[in-house]
Image: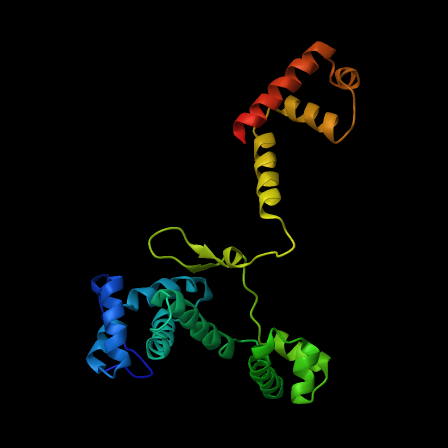
Length: 255
């Protein structure tokens, strides 16, 4: 029976069972109705998900068995709290639950200790933030008013319990391409089409020869004439013109 801790010593993880989406759905419905056998099968069938998440923290020099057990707590919480009425894949809900549980464990067991008073203030602020989030994302000032503390103290407390995360840290991988933190972030002020075109243009220019890049740079960013460029690099204007036209063709083809 699964409780707050799962022992994995001696378990051959390569033999862990897997479930189809249909099987997961049926087991979730049965588990929600109180079927404990379905609940255990659902947990067993998603242990690979926990293994996948634990692997993302392998560079932390933590005991992998401990992290796996903590991750299983997150999985169990996901199983017990998943809303089957929503049109959402179970893994979409379970991944942040598992990751969050592991991060809390690492944060609370960090060698850089945060004082009890600061942590208490941070947790009160997080509780207030969740309460105020009903009407949108609350500001530090709103959270501070809610708990009767100075904004500067609240801000410092929240920063003290926050662990920096790399934009390239994988959030989830299921045998295919990994989903990174950067993939989950959006700049609302950016135009995606312009952003993608800019990347494509830079990549296309990078494929040009050094002389072609120099000519394109001087023409468009330096505002120079073909004659001026010819004098700088020691070739004729006709050669500059030919190289420039060839560069345009390469850029169009590469984009």
